[in-house]
Length: 80
Image (cartoon, rainbow, N blue to C red; front, top):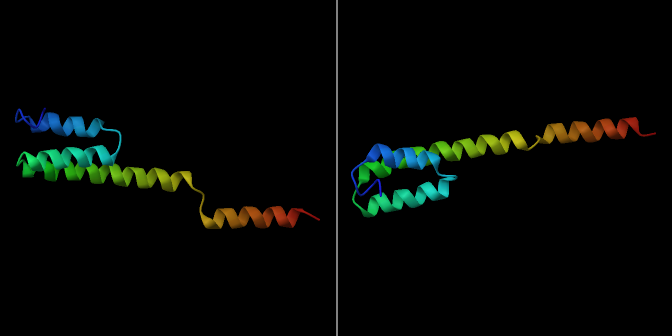
């Protein structure tokens, strides 16, 4: 609706509140269908931010290979 009423800032604010990049992608598709190319580009930037944020969160959640191998090696060393 924000796209229809020429309120780009509202559309961008709404996109920031969307839970994941897939929903933002839907907004990009809708903006493109409405011939709002500049808005679609800005929404693409919002989607990229969300994608990079998800990637950072995934990287923080998963232990690295080195951490796992060090953990296993320390367990094996302490076992007689």
